[in-house]
Image (cartoon, rainbow, N blue to C red; front, side, top):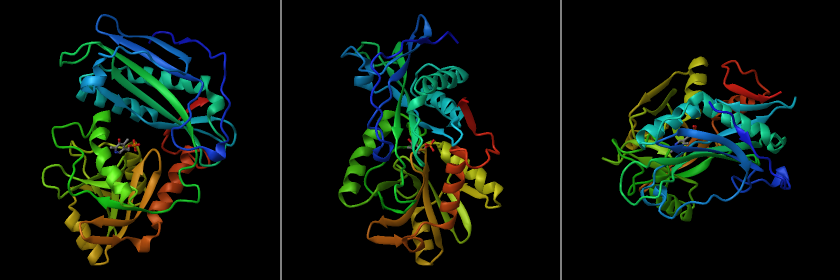
Length: 356
Ligand SMILES: *Cc1c(COP(=O)(O)O)cnc(C)c1O
């Protein structure tokens, strides 16, 4: 790993009031950049003042979409330590996405060091108010100017950061979800398991329509038969049916969430083993009709746990747990956020300390 060059900003920004923070609207004083060229490989790691990038209009990302990203958070503990939650998993997944998009691999331990260095420079931006955090967005895009269709020979790996407010300002609460029957997010053999911009580009229309109809998110079904449950918006999904917890198996078209992985680990250790399998929407509907659909919740970095109070599928409306947050969803939420913000012991060694 080459030395990180640091160019400090001379005009530090005013920090926002932590009680008014939204998601991803304000950015810290600095950003991290790393270049790739086929001659030099990944080179010139640097932390520079946050600001616009200059790109050639022919930069391949604009035309053919070679772009991947990650999302993770840093938290400030009561004793003023800064913790990042499982950055190793994000670094690992970044390379999984890179591989699928024909973007060159990065050294995963270097990625963690780069992120730590940036958080450390902007450590004053990690908010203190309960429920707040510093959202970290690493991303890679093809910068080579070329209109030919092939893997680019130049890329930039960048990291930007944004202080974010508590996801649940009035406590964890359930959302209404629409099961999407027309559009699909991903297909087997496609890029569903990669965290790539294109997956979102193709999903936005369904999300806009669902939002228009009063739903918080879309639940995606499989791309081939429109029968099997995949995931929710930018979250993985779990159900509790007749006492058993199930989640769709990672089949190539589902994103392997870090939160999903953490939830499976916790539930197993609580004596509630999770069955990873193919789950049809019909099965969920049936369980609901028989009164066996006890809980449903999404998992992802932004919300951590998002209980589903109502599922809408074609002409059916399924109300889950009386539209209230389930016991397991609540316990998972409290446990994971507690580990993240340092109020519960980190018995899994999930946290990485940025600075004491
Ligand atoms: C990022 C993401 C998730 C959640 O992953 P986490 O690592 O838990 O944040 C789930 N689905 C999609 C499509 C995603 O992009």
